Length: 319
Ligand code: MTE
Image (cartoon, rainbow, N blue to C red; front, side, top):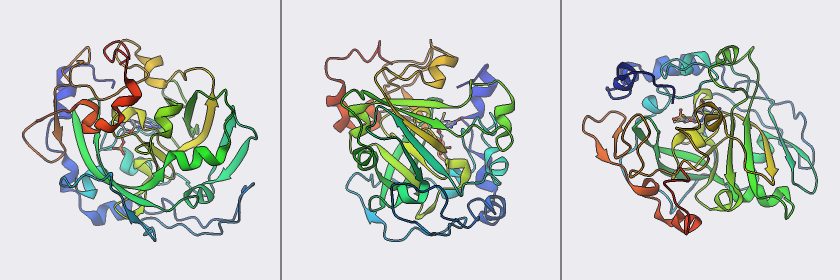
């Protein structure tokens, strides 16, 4: 990311200070996060969700997933207090507090581009389209730290199938909310806003690609991308766009934000690949948040089942 000097790099290597924050502090901070009652707004094309979503509300009916790792999970407090969310801050400790008042209900997602019919869906209708699963995934940030998180969601392909993309849809583009009033980081041109990410259609259809609305059995805290994000465990974390308001099917490869910002450093694919150094640091190893020693980074972050998506591609060029 925008790491400019070695002192910045060092900051991602130390034991995170959020381990000192109590859960109580977090609860106070996340406070009103999703507390607004839903008023059944803007739901078209699907049945009435009529739900109230509270901060830290438990998600009912979560199934286990065979895609889960049994590695030790990163504590909730670390995952919710060490965040890359540039819409709020470039400092990883600040989004927990700065995002606490983000209004996540009502929230609609526009689905357009190469679809038979444009849709405007309420987020709570989306979360109900398939049974929620707990997917305990490794998540590797391009900066060299990693976490193991029990995300809650379902395979993105469930939603895609409901969207009726046309045969011309070759890619899926995700766009984050643009609202500088609520997102102070957007008042600064540190990135080109809104944040955009994308996948090739076959990547998006892969069962590992998760449409995510919770973690640790509860609704997502705002700083982790409430109310709706994607999680692509075989790719560097920046591909996993947060707080999504638009899903667009396209013929052409989306021009993702990090590629726009630093094309020599961040490409479209961003598959975790320990054999391709970032121009400014090695990607061979990573440090789990809360651990001292580094561990080797695995190709595709250990998710070898996606390798077939890239057969015949030079993943050094297509970084
Ligand atoms: N999505 C948006 N909209 N804005 C961001 O700054 N940061 C990305 C990704 N998604 C980012 C984003 C990066 S760099 C990472 S590592 C992950 O979110 C971090 O997700 P987490 O905070 O839930 O661990």
